[in-house]
Amino acid sequence: MLRIRGSIGDWPVDLTLEMDDADWARLGAQLQVEKSAVSVPAAKPLNQDDALWQIARDLLRKAGQLSGPDLLDQLEGLTGSAAAGKRLLVRLRHSPDVKVVSGGDTPLYSWIE
Image (cartoon, rainbow, N blue to C red; front, top):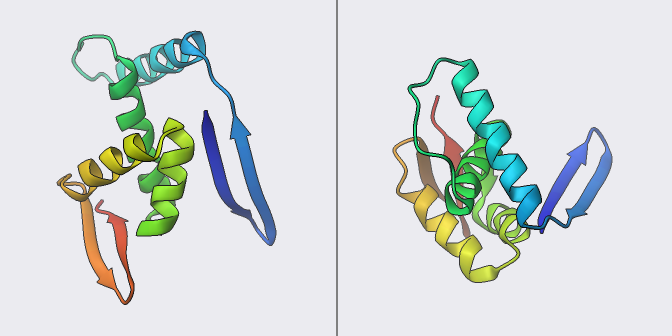
């Protein structure tokens, strides 16, 4: 299951997509195609964990900055599991592409260009 929350202009968006293993495989294959289109060296095929990691990175990269609770909500929706969402959040926290700053009560996760 993949949950997307946010807004388009002033309109709130809360979208849930249910994906089975075949859907994840197609998504992983699409990510692999996009990688090769930018002439990235060939790598092993993406498994579901790798595909989720790429999606989580893209989610934060496209958003630019998200609060910890908002990012966790989106990651939980993406994975369908609170534990898996937390694992991705921790992985993002330790990624060299992500800066985490204490923003009052909640941390702010920012993508570093």
